[in-house]
Image (cartoon, rainbow, N blue to C red):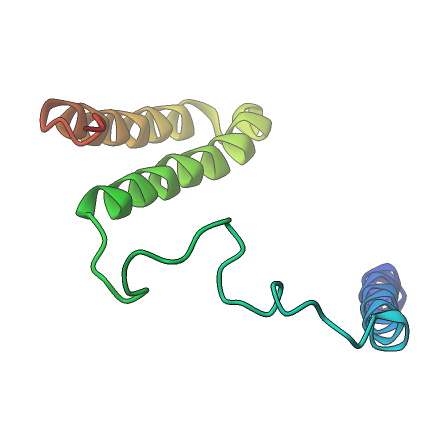
Length: 118
């Protein structure tokens, strides 16, 4: 039984070894004399105009929430499409209901003009 989990343990172990070796190489080989320009908090070519803690426009958050919503939709669609033969008509109808709810949410956001950028 434990032999079935050996590949997973091996992948975790290889991930730790690679992560630790890359961190060690960085500590050994990285230059120790950074340029004063690179030590500045902003590297975009000009000084900051406002405080970093100034409030953002709510549209940034709406777009982020919409991205997460439709990203989660794709996460649920892939296993559904793979297992469509096994789940039958009941699973198909349930997924259509789920997609209809997401479509209603998209239609609501579209109607409220949340997707338009000024």
